[in-house]
View 1 (tube, rainbow, N blue to C red):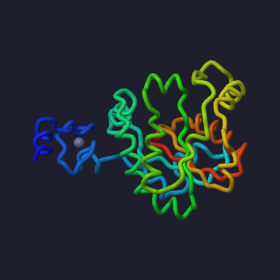
View 2: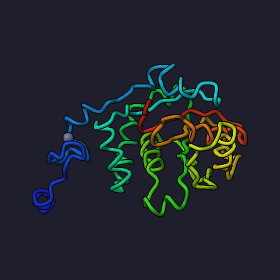
View 3: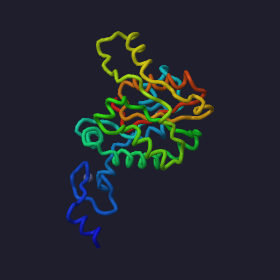
View 4: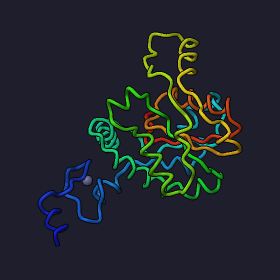
Length: 226
Ligand SMILES: [Zn+2]
């Protein structure tokens, strides 16, 4: 009864269309959930993400949950994650994606997950790492080991626009380090990022992992902006 009253006084709103949510809905109304621009990449080899990363790092599979389009639902969701600190929404999206990935994860023997770490200065500013929250949602549903604590970020540097290709590569190559390489021994690790655009961040983090650890890598992200 009390819960019902509170719900009436403070209705939860859909983060996409602002409509009041019914009690069974979380963050997104059913209508918006059905309209999510899902890529279904995990069902298709040679998808856009895999083509973006081919020849740059060794990986088994790569897939993104949603297509990114300007003014669309994905952009609203990412805005909510980034500027309104909605960590629970990131976990929820991870849970949603985790349920989609079940068969793919099992058939490829993926048994661990790692979120791309944020630099501590950015963590302070944003309050949380949205890639980690998304990865936590996935691992919760799929019951796979979370090794996110084993990879860390040395520097915050992202500004690479004025550097040439080689300088840029060296620059990103030194961003990440692996703390306990033996934890990755013989594992198949799902490396998780928020948005994949050029794939430079994924490339630098994955290359550090495969260089230092005896493991296989697959890649997942919340969104793919081609
Ligand atoms: Zn809605």
